[in-house]
Image (cartoon, rainbow, N blue to C red):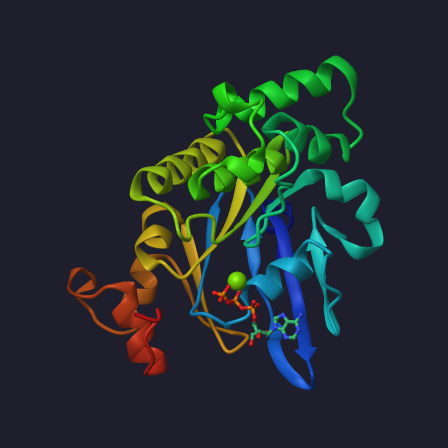
Length: 256
Ligand SMILES: Nc1ncnc2c1ncn2[C@@H]1O[C@H](COP(=O)(O)OP(=O)(O)OP(=O)(O)O)[C@@H](O)[C@H]1O
Ligand SMILES: [Mg+2]
């Protein structure tokens, strides 16, 4: 690997492994995210996507393997590096008994941002997700889509270099879904690297520059959507990612 490649990599997992009750749910996972890309992690329910993201974000401790973030071992440099990362977890992290702006304040202040700067970041984050008008409402009274948007606002106030989205569009209407996808693309255009986890292949195909398909804790194929399709057929127009997954695994990506 030459110097340029090392520079271009923002995050890398090396043999990342997790077992629960003796069962391997993430199995020697090696993925590499390049600076400036939207990287998609696509896999069915139970593939190990959230467990992988939780290990990347230091929420779950791996049984084996490491995460390199910004060229350093993330676990060993947590204090310095955590502020460079924003995580939008699959299970909402927001507090229903707090107002929208208080939720953003709580999370953004964890990164040491205070005073006027904190106020500005709260305003900016709520504006970004289109919730400025609802800033004084309690999160518990929000619709599902608004909760998802607030969950995002809580993760962006500290201006991270890498944003990780774990299934941010599950259970919301198409309008909110498109809003979130547009915002992810906008953040990426403004220089943020994105990891996007989903089991909706159309979304992953629409926004991601590279995709890893995960099943049973392993990456079974990775590349651009075109490269993945070429694994199965020559004519890439004739097949969807869903069919690629079905061909490789014999399984459907989604539970219908
Ligand atoms: N804390 C835990 N204790 C025991 N088993 C767990 C725990 N967390 C996850 N698992 C198991 O690990 C496997 C992978 O789960 P994970 O949540 O990572 O999958 P996922 O790909 O994110 O699925 P989904 O698309 O449903 O969110 C599943 O079989 C799950 O039951
Ligand atoms: Mg998950």
